[in-house]
Amino acid sequence: MAQVARFWGGIDFSTAAARVRKLVDEGILKRAEMPHFDVRPLLVTDNGRLLAGDTLPAVKGIRAATYSHDSKLVDLAMDLEKKFAARFETEREYRWRRPDRASEFHVPDGLLRRENTTIGIELELTQKAPRRLAEIIDSHAANLELDEVWYVVADETMRGYVHRIAGESSHIKIVKWTPSGTAAAQKGENN
Image (cartoon, rainbow, N blue to C red; front, top):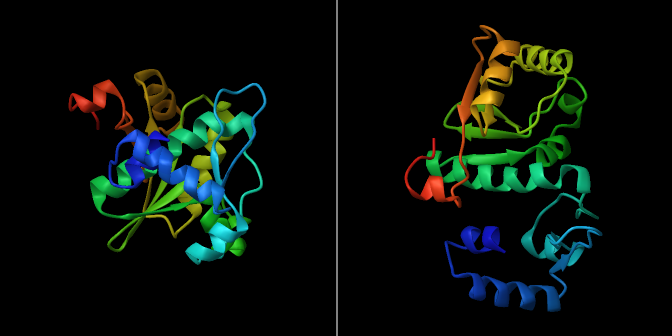
């Protein structure tokens, strides 16, 4: 609900909750059931998708294994769009729009489109096997559609790990990020 409130321009939590209840009652949104989780994420229904003019099929469910990453990616996308006044295209949107490219290269978590620049965004919260991370970095280097790739990390340990694997790859930037909603970010420590 905090993400919804933020998306709607920073309205208060209770106003966001009331609006969401109305949208759920009207069949525009629905709550995903996630056994063993305390959260019930929101999903757009087919009716909501049609109302919004979205051409992507509605998401049918949430994967528990990637929920934490995907939830933080929403915060990151909103932070990047606000900071750079740019459009963040999700991996899902890209795969739908460019299925030919999605099978040719590793698709990043998202694409930040700024002026005439396309930046691949990878949110790295946990360590991949070194060989797998190196393969992904090499795939990004071969993808001429990407001007650079930002590996967004939450701590210095992950920054060091990605840096060791990426080496001197000129197309890779490692960026430390603190989500905007956290106390550290509110004190102005967000990068």
